[in-house]
Amino acid sequence: MKKIFFLSSLLFASFLFVNSCANNQEPKQEAMKKDSAASCSNSTIMDPNTPKPMALMMRSMAANADSIKAKILRGEKLDSLQFPFLRFYLVEPTDKNVLEPSFFEHAKVFQKAYYEVFNHPTEQKKYYNLYIGKCVACHQNYCSGPLKRINKMPINE
Ligand code: HEC
Image 1 (cartoon, rainbow, N blue to C red):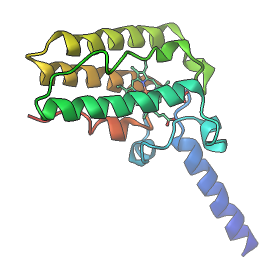
Image 2 (image 1 turned 30 degrees about the vertical axis):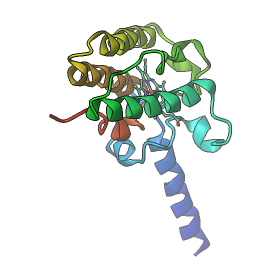
Image 3 (image 1 turned 45 degrees about the vertical axis):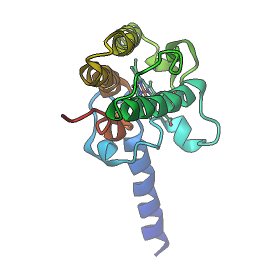
Image 4 (image 1 turned 90 degrees about the horizontal axis):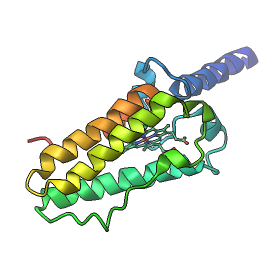
């Protein structure tokens, strides 16, 4: 009986491990199924109470994207002052291995797409969706856990 308990906790532990996204090159099905509120790295799972600054900024970015979407759907004008760009790529991530050239390349493309949303007041849906596409592009490479949530963010016409 004890052995079964040990085996099933081992299974659970490896499930958590699979769900983590540190260095996750090929997004795993299991990881996609996981709720996105959960973070994407081993250390965050082990210590969920002390998220790193980048993880915290990502939460704000996701909340901002939800607010931007709601405003667009209500037909309200977006004010860039209300949604300042968060320089997440300058702060400490949970997994420092992400800080490689292609990560900063994704960040640059994403930042550009962010400003485009505010630069196109008459085509906000289109540019909002392009901007969310850049969240997806980076997450496919660096942190697949939150993709389930991000994939619900585009505005469907
Ligand atoms: C350039 C790459 C990149 C872009 C662009 C990006 N992310 Fe992230 N995201 C990351 C990385 C890396 C982490 C892990 C951060 C950490 O744990 O320190 C993360 C973590 C997250 C998390 C989990 C935070 C937590 O609770 O631990 C969410 C949610 C998230 N991102 C949503 C978004 C949304 C929404 C966008 C677009 C508006 C976005 N991300 C754009 C790389 C990116």
